Length: 435
Image 1 (spheres, rainbow, N blue to C red):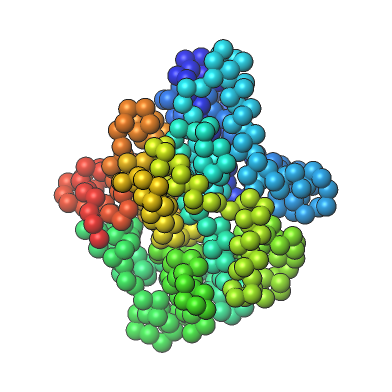
Image 2: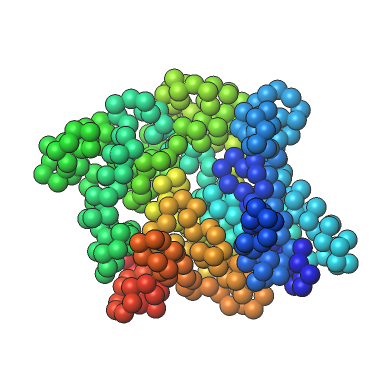
């Protein structure tokens, strides 16, 4: 709660199964401030967040297992995680702010990535009157479809059909080698993701482009598994359940952990978490219906109609996604944003871009673009809400030992940053270009 309060409230979403407080302040061992969220330091906002209703540091109170312990506290923890903690936090924060400063916030914002991105859409859906602007990253408004895709991969985990971490990593590096230069610069990033048509089959054992090492090249079954990620998941009727991933490094993914937890939330069957054998039984035709209904009934999934209502009313939403997200598909995020925009048009909003825009952070893996020091989402949403300055291009700032500090454009979907000329570490040397 800053002394120079601007009248703003910034609510921060969590991540994963939550269970921790994402503080605005980073202290060293002596208690000295080492870093401060830009929402507080730059926007002079009151900062509010929560642990989502569980404590990861206390085994008996940690999600996801606490949600199925059969106690009232466990049931409340699940409801808090599904959606309720969002409302409790904003209401508490506004009441405390009014008590402390003598007035309520004049503008309220929500920002989150991954589960925090789901939180952001839950904020819109359930408490639209509380928020003026929302930033939602790395989660695509369809938890049921996302879970189905996770389970479709997790069911082969532990079998010869699942590539090893080394094989996943080498597959991604092969894709980068094939597609890196298509954005005008060879720099280890597939910025022109839509222009990458790399074929998984080139890495099959025996192919000229594959490794001769049988622990690195892919078997036929492993090629099929990899192709499920770069192909859309469809029902038996041919409808898209979940859109394909763009190229990413899937070597550290944990689909069974995430998918199993959401299957358990939807069905109250904890064996989806505890039993790999149960996960191996996942069948899209059999389980998609109960999964979809269950997540809607618990309140864990998002309602696209409510998001359409929010933007049709003129409230502002910045959607964004990491360009090399290994957990959540940016293409499915875009598919659902497009559906929301069509709904908003039907409600009378002639141009959805007046209130809702989607951006891609180039080359980042899941949650890589969420820090306000990486992309200043706080300034972008505040400028849009309070000054009417709609974001058209943002900047990603990265710092690595190999390249030092580097900036790249964050372009509106489906544009990508194409190198033109000049210093490759400066965003001004690139232009947002249609694929």
